[in-house]
Image (cartoon, rainbow, N blue to C red; front, side, top):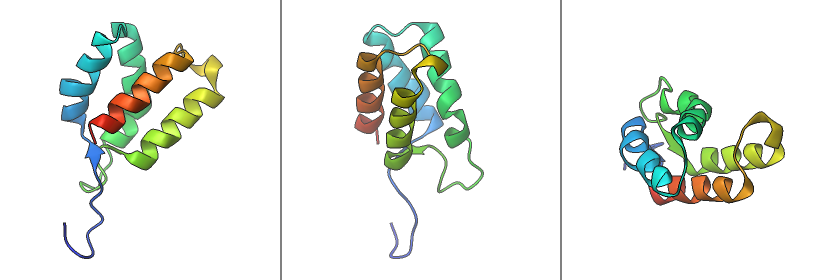
Length: 92
């Protein structure tokens, strides 16, 4: 990382599919729930700037906060939100 680089640790689309999805599946998440989560992070995963592609720590915090504040907009319970947050941060 250079002195003026904007590189931040992030979970790439490839890492999300290879690591995060399979780990959450191991925690009991169903395919439908994993697809729903992917829909929430899809925009961050496909950002046009290559240095911003993926989901970083701030975006993980924002996602977790939004999920907690909008329980009627998704099917995740509090335990699952914690597992999502923990798993994403683990793979930064």
